[in-house]
Length: 330
Image (cartoon, rainbow, N blue to C red):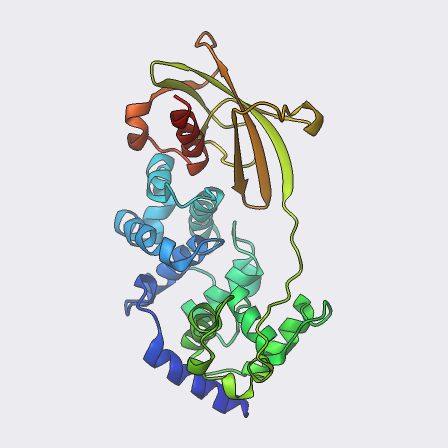
């Protein structure tokens, strides 16, 4: 299969099957750069269907890069509330400010400059280059990796290494429609070459796909082990009012409202206590004891939250999960 034929087949499939997504709509170059930047930050560790309503609300409330660089943190977090991984929102604002400080308000279009911006690594930089600026690079996300692993039937550790996958992606070639081509490759992985039950009969690459010929679609991945950490959350409250504090202690959920907490060692974690909650966060499995106390504690920067006002306050899902656990125990 010639490389030019591959790109034509993939783009033909994309033109007839792509999802209608708000950041893909035809707009000015300036808007396209902004929409690409915002959507790529939101899509880090979050599924497309989850991102769509958040993206639409975000660009409605904060419509351009200048507004983003000047937005107050309360409004920024309100627009991001519920999407999780709040450091992305903070980095997005820092990036906007740095673009005006270092690049005269213009989103840079090269790998070196893009990677100097907060929250932008190798993949996001390449995605911006391809999608926003139509530069012939192929960003390697999990979807593209999966297509390559199945097409070439890559199973061994050395075969699924980043270096080898980057070599294999040259198979795709390039296209003058680099923006569409990068999105098309990711789209095939997302809606055709799915992790489970791939739709091979609809795939433009199935005729040459080794996994399809072998009828073996298992994906080999390098195992990522989550760190298990132990915490004690102190619950001060009565009459449906609970004490929260602004988090300046932990690297996760920075500057957001959480219950007063401290990390404890595994041997200090009282497994016999029923009052516990388990929460997964990024690459961390958190096991948390909920230690109820009477409301006689004063903590610097504390905030008394009435349960009835929970939807009126910017709270991370983490804190809401603990609230939900406490509600069940009443």
